[in-house]
Image (cartoon, rainbow over all chains, first blue to last red; front, side, top):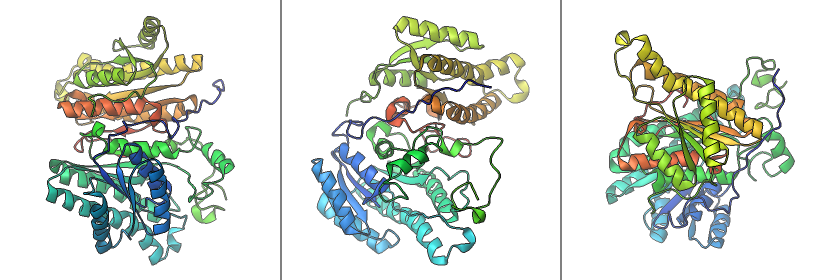
Length: 293
Length: 208
């Protein structure tokens, strides 16, 4: 029996600490879809730290404007744009609006998405469509619109996609998002191959648990701390480290990196043991995403 | 833009093992990011790895907290032509030595109550012959295993698997060095058990 050792849980530097040089994105216009809350906001703030101009795309303009105000308080420029990423006309219009105000979009962060626990057999057509089409169609439509514009300009560009830690293992009780998020990861590689010779890089961050105000119990510190204990790293992710990962992949420091899916989950997707609690199928669980009956 | 990465590291001592353009680019960027670089030999046993870590710590007057382990030249010889000596040399550099160093560094960090980071530099599975395929498969799953085993000790384990590790353009080598520096820094404190490439044509383990 191994000796029990104390837990050593490593926190990232504070959100305010400089990661990339201040002016690293000063020539860039970054569009973040689903940028008005949670992980999209995390990415937007990381790009703003590097001096980028931001187009914050969301369906709720008021929420997007709140993130714009945060970025402006950092001394940077941002614009709120309302769009549904499933609608190609709306996507094109969002680019037009952003580019008229800020200049050509040079970096795209595809973050728009949604998720909720559900038994597969109980998923309605609308529920399946909502989750898969925002993530899959939305990523496709925004990326292709972005690429067409960059190709027309003969300019380089970078895309970062938001995926999830469960993309290589499946996620019982989450059929819609499990399919959607893996499609985003594999689409990343296909885009990267298509556009490599044109200097458009495409990468993906496969995220673990990054609680935020809009996620389930994400605003309750006690709950978040409890959730951290189920993760090998001993904590949930902090939003700034998610943002930094996305910003790094789009930065000049990563100028040769393309087609990659970077897992950032504190080891959550790798947690396993030969001996586990009895298997309880999702339909018998008190919480579809939990372990217990 | 400056040619090197920002000061992501707070003067740790890194022991760097292996040879080739890739590992030299990584050592260069780690130094730029703030690390003190020590070197060690490929190890055929725990004892050799332990001795190298002790020597590096003594020379730097600070404990080693980072390990970067690349391989060596890869044999592309057909499998039926490989003799045992060539096979074992490849497996030692590609897999065994990495395990010995990782385990010895983890033991050292745990004993001192320190946290640290381990980064393996590898070619993709199809970046060489049979030796590379076997070593790369073993290393990938070793990365994932050690990452979870030592996660609560504050020791992270990641791999960069790319043909760029064997050599590349200046731009590719800089990106490799920057990715390595980022991954071992606390800015990537939530990245562990990951296997990341550089180029879209790097063939990685399924699920990497």
